[in-house]
Image (tube, rainbow over all chains, first blue to last red):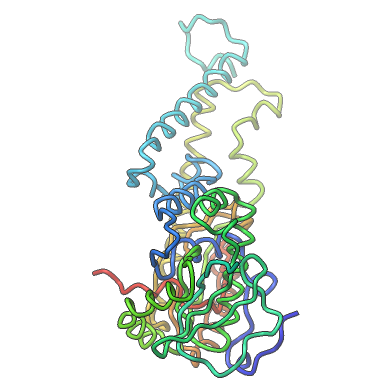
Amino acid sequence: MTQPSPMAGRLPEPYGSGGGANLADILERVLDKGVVIAGDIRINLLDIELLTVKLRLIVASVDKAKEMGIDWWETDPALSSGARRDELARENAELRARLAELESGRPRSRAHGPEEAS
Amino acid sequence: MTGLRYVYAVCRPFGAPLQAQLTGVAGAPPRQLVHHGLVAVFSEVPASDFAEEPLRAHLEDLDWLTATARAHQGVIDALTVVTTPLPLRLGTVFHDDSGVRTMIEARERVFRRTLERLEGRVEWGVKVYAEVSPEQAQSGTPSAPAVSGQPVSGRDYLRRRSTQARAHENMWQQAEEFAGRLHATLCAHAEDSRLHNPQNATLSGAAGRNVLNAAYLVPRSRSEEFVELVDRTKDESKGGTPGMRVELTGPWAAYSFVEEEQT
């Protein structure tokens, strides 16, 4: 499909799958980088910014990302709800722990320590 | 009726022809408009898709966006083979040729300065992934105790969680150190570098967690050397730091370096 060009030999072969890159590689460049010029067709750049943020937000889960130290959304004013999501994740973990406790079949009374359960 | 002008890039006049079958966004072939000694590479696109309203709607459509982004990048890629393009952000559209000329005139000085700075240089993307082994991934699942059929107390559960958290912390620390060393090494062999946000796995489709996502500006003449250097660290990561994966993409047009660094 791609014609070999006269200058192609000067550069190493393209890396990545199919001589290209993954979708995230391409989107982060064509949407986020490059020269920003307001054309005649005024698409609000803020719209694009929001879109890329939305795309990035498909991050697997907030607590996993936090473990990795990815917390850019916390400093992003457009995403101030991040703190609330974190709160939810913590609440989730607490609820899971409580559920595990209940499922262990212990009586509701908490007079004794949990050692008895095991 | 003529269409709108979707501009991909601005570059210096180049002698070599673009691939004959190259298609850009909306399936339209890229053309050149020469003005003041600069070339705008553009496609004629239908107003029904690229006027303000439809364009805005399309940008919210991931399928359309994906196809358009790939087509945009395809043209930039083809240009990178024959010249040093200044890629414009996706969706830079003008009414007609005279709109494009006006834009070139208004930005002429900056274009020339940037083209001068980037001439003969390409961008290489390097990403480091930390790969979680299957056992680690398994033990990280909160439902694991239920599967084993053993009741677990809340305290045990929390204790296990904190042990896992510590193991993870060690792993991320190692990953970070590895990525930091690699970045320092690569910087020494590049003219400039940029750190990007880590990518999310859903979009990239890559396994493991992205702990370094960097771009390096390298002269074409030194690209082979740079690629070999990255290849060597790939081998090194297999031996020395298990669980690390290094990925190289490029050569890209110097997308990440078109803006002068704000210091």
